[in-house]
Image (tube, rainbow, N blue to C red; front, side):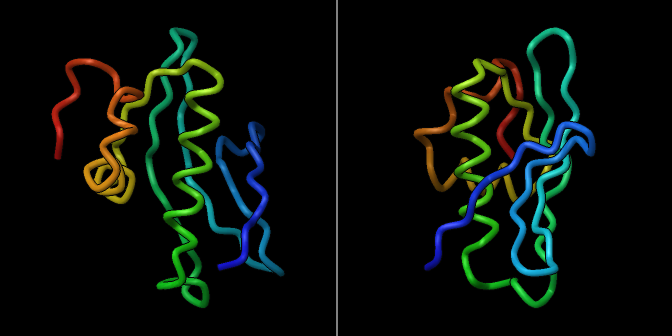
Length: 99
C-alpha cells in the first residue's frame, strides 16, 4: 500500500491525508489540559476498504504520542483500531472505558 503524508490541519481541527482531490481525515477536539478527543474518522467512499483509515489512525496516534497528549477515542473506528493494536492503549486517558 502507498504511504501517505499526515498533516495536522489545526485550523480545521483534523488530521488528514491529501489523496488527489480527496481528503481522508480524523476530526478532533484539543483542550488546554493536554487532551485530544478523536471525534470522527472519515474516509471518502472511493478510498474505503484500502487500509487508508488504519494508516491515518496509526500516523495520528504517533503524532499524539510525540506531542505527549492524552487520547479520548470518541470515534468507533479509533476505539476499534486501539482494541486491535493494544500497543496504543497507553495513550488513552485513564478512566476512559473500552468500547
